Image (cartoon, rainbow, N blue to C red):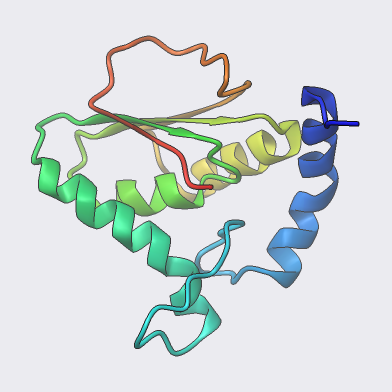
Length: 140
């Protein structure tokens, strides 16, 4: 039987703490897969590869007052990485299906002192966001 939306939400609510404990690093807090590209030496670097690739592409846009959305933001790791590497006028929204992830991302946002990001819970197949974004991305 195929998984439904509730099953997926429950899966992420239940397993996010395990992903962070066993498949992440305290520096990246990523829950996406590590990418072991040539020259990558350790797990911390492998977890940062996708975040750095997205940041590199966003910088190429050279859009003033950039607004972006991270669909499936998890605990906010990529979004926070981008915000740290871009100008302060950037604004971001993170959307996650998981209430556990949304809570963790919101707590991290506050702990990091980030005021130009908003975290919300929802299904990115039915995005409850407007169309006023320069960039919308998702890391699978």
